[in-house]
Amino acid sequence: MDETDLPRVLQRLWGIEGPARPGPKPAFHLSDIGRAAIKLADTGGLAAVSMSKVAAELGFTTMSLYRYVDAKDDLYVVMLDYAFGEPPAPDPEQGWRERITAWAEAFRDGLRKHPWILQIPLTEPPLSPHQLAWMESALQAFDGTPLTPQDRLSSMILVNIYVRGTVQLTSNQLAGGDEAKAADRLYNQRLRMLATPDRFPTIAAGVNQPDAVEDLDVDFDAGGFHDGLDTVLDGIQARIDRKS
Amino acid sequence: MDETDLPRVLQRLWGIEGPARPGPKPAFHLSDIGRAAIKLADTGGLAAVSMSKVAAELGFTTMSLYRYVDAKDDLYVVMLDYAFGEPPAPDPEQGWRERITAWAEAFRDGLRKHPWILQIPLTEPPLSPHQLAWMESALQAFDGTPLTPQDRLSSMILVNIYVRGTVQLTSNQLAGGDEAKAADRLYNQRLRMLATPDRFPTIAAGVNQPDAVEDLDVDFDAGGFHDGLDTVLDGIQARIDRKS
DNA sequence: CGCACACTGTGTGCGCCGTACACAGACCAT
DNA sequence: ATGGTCTGTGTACGGCGCACACAGTGTGCG
View: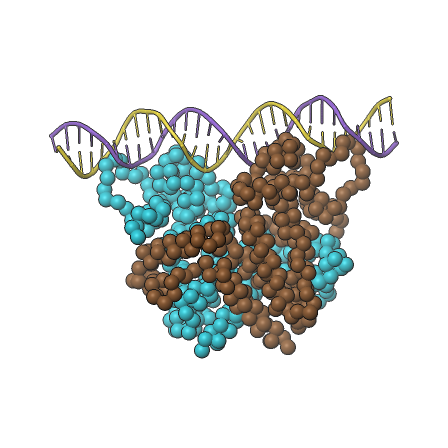
C-alpha cells in the first residue's frame, strides 16, 4: 500500500521524490536520459541504445546512468514513457467507434514514429504516467456504451493488440513505397516457389490466382489497417448489441 | 526465380542441398542445433541461448555453428521452425469457426510451451516449412466460406495477432495459479494508488468498483481467451455475412 | 557555525557476447 | 594419387551490462 513498494524508476517517473538530502545535486534528469536514448533509437534502432552511447550523448560517463536507473530494463521503461507523450483527447461529440478509431490511429502513428517500441520485450503491465494516460484515453472512448468496465478493458486490449500486431507486420521494411512493394513481390515470389500445391494447396491457390496482383502485408499500409480494425470493431459492436 | 536466391538457412530447412561435394562430412545437422537451442530456451529463456551455449550443448566449439548458420538471427529462424512442429489438421466436418478456434488454441498452446518465441524479433515474413504449414492449416479453416483469398489471409493474420498478443500479455508471469493471482492483485493495487480519479477517472472507476474482485490479464488465462477470440471471430463473421 | 555523512559522478575491471579470420585435417572428383 | 574444397578448431577483437572502490559535494544536525 505504501508508495515505496513501487520500482524506483516508476517512483521517479511519477515525480515521487523523497525530501531534500545531503550530497551534490544531480547533474541531469531522467527525462534527459529518455530523450537521449530515444534519439539514438530513432536513428539507429533499439540496438543502437547502450548505456555507454546514452551516457556519451549526454556528455557523462556510462556508470553515471546507474544513479538514475537500476538496470537496462529501467532505461526501456523510461524510453517508453517519454516516447508516447500525451494521448489524443477523446472527442465527446463522436461515437465510441470514431473515438477508438482515432485512438488506434494515434497509437499506430506513435509506433510508426518509434518502431523500436515494438522491439522492447514487455515484461510488466503498464504503470508509467503516459502509459496510463493512453489507457485512460482508450477507455474513455467507450463512454456511453453498455459495456462493463471489464468489457471496456478487454476491448481496449483487443484494439491495442491489433495495432501493435499490424504495425509489427508492416514495419519490417520501414521504408515506404517502392521498397515495400519490392519486398512484397519478393515474398510472393518465394511463396509461389515454396508453397507447392500438393502440400500447401490453399496458400498456392491464394498466391497463384490471376486477379489480384500481389497479396499480403503491404495492404495493411494502405486501407488494410482500417479494414482489419473495422473487423475488430465489428466484433466489439456485436458484444455491445448483446448487452443492450 | 532461382531457388538459390533464398537465404541459406531457408534452403537448408527446406532440404534443398547441393550435390555431393568434396570435404569432410558434416558432424551434425541443423535440427541438432535447433533442438539444443530450444532446450536451452525452454529452461532459461531466450537470453540463455548463445552461440557458445548451444555449441557446448552439442559438444562442439562455438565457431563450428557458423558452418550451419550465417548469424545469430538464422539460429532464431531454425528455432522457430522446429519449435512449432506440425500444425493440427483442420477437421472438415466442422465449421470455419470451430476450425479456426482449434487452430488458435493449438497456436496458443505452442506459444505457452515455448514462451521465448514471442521474444524473438520478427524481421521477415514466414517462409520456413513448419511456418508455412501452420499458415496453410489456418487458411484451410476458412474453406467453404465466401471469403476471398485476400480476406482469408487477413482473417488469419487477425487471429494470429490476437493469439500472440494475448499470450504475450499473460505469459509475463508464466507460473499459473497463485503467483499470477498475486501479480494481478499487486497490479490492481498499484493502479488504485496511481490512477487518481482526477486525472484517470475511467481507470479509477474500473479498478475501484466493488463488484468484481480483480480485473485485467488473469482473466485471459481462464475464459478470457475465448471471449476475446469470439469477439474477433464475430468481426470476421460480419465480414462473411456482408459477402453473402 | 562546522562537521559528519549520504549522495554525486568517475575509473577500473570482469565476464559474456557475436563473429572475423587463419589454420590443419578430412574427403570427393578427377 | 592427388587437388581443391569443405570441415571443425583456436585465437582475437570490439562491445556490451554492470559490480565496486573512490574522491568530491553539499545538506541537515549538533
